[in-house]
Amino acid sequence: MRILFYTGKGGVGKTSIAAATAVRCADLGYRTVVLSTDLAHSLADSLDVRLGPEPREVTPHLWAQETDIHHNLQTHWGTVQEWLTALLAWQGVVDSLVADELTVLPGMDELANLLWINRHREAGSYDVIVVDAAPTGETLRLLSFPDVLRWWMEHIFPVHRRAMGMARPLMSAFVNVPLPSERVYDNIKELYAHLDQLHRMLVDPELTSVRQVLNPEKMVVAEAQRTHAYLQLFGYPTDLVVVNRVLPPEVVDPFFAAWKDTQATYLRQIAEGFQPLPIRTVPLFENEVLGLGLLRRMGEALYGRDDPTHIFFRGRTQTVERGPDGTFELVIPLQFAARGDVQLRQTGDELYVRVGAHRRHIVLPRALAGRHATGAKLDGPARALRVRFGSSAGDRATPAPPGPR
Image (cartoon, rainbow, N blue to C red):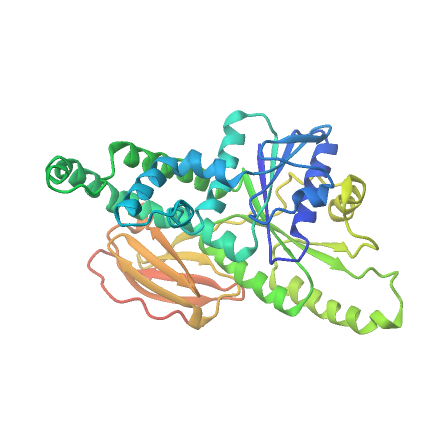
């Protein structure tokens, strides 16, 4: 099975590229499902068919769906939501609509949509899952959520559950506040298990490919570069960059001359900046890309004779290198990261790396266990972050702010 995950700034044509990829996979004989995790679904418009919360076959070998947010929330968050609703009622919040809104954590609705990937893989009904993801800001927040939840589940959840188990009988005798039951804790633990499984699938480079869609425009390119740095930070395997809506050579009208020159400038910037990732371009079509016919044309323009399920680039997300003096370096590719963007903090065998507004919690590999970071540099044209560790557990120092070497 392959999972093809398409993300990009809103309005770049990401949904069309995802749908065209799904049509191409189906034409090659793969049992393919394409699903939208964006709350503002547009997949049905792109395919020009009616879609519902369950997969619907739209052409041989191709199924599509626009997931039902309320059903997903009830499945994965229902028990916790019932307890939170009771707690709000105890606090005097009696409006059911307000309670429903307050009991859904920010991003939980989009996250529940992503969990369909688990269900499809477990069912084994498809060879390819194509994901039309939400715009990059929302997607990055969701992709970082499993790291945050893992820390909470490992450090806080067991203590809180044991404490509540001991205190619940005593507290129930003196206060009437609704207390979380074992079913609530079981629901949270089950949700975490699903998210952990989803995370393992999405960071597996043999299973998942994250592909960025962009246009040759200044603001879009800048956001795509930041997104690429964040994807590298969290270890998500990116194997392709798709540049959409490129003016084709046959457009020779003088009205478009300046536009073509501008696009050529940004195409060079994209080619230079994203290397060694392969770059594919898709021309601006003369009509809106709607329906299977035009999506098929777009898929042919994007992939030619290539199979979209192929892995177009393989690259390791982080490595450990040993120096001749017995020191080690943890190397994390952070293309497009600047010196002031990166901050580091080590706590025991845990390293916290912040790039801009996003932070990743890294459990150090066994080779670095017990060692302390002694410095860090952003090194080389590919902007790899190199975190140096002492040759023994006795070497202690605060990591220096990353800077060019």
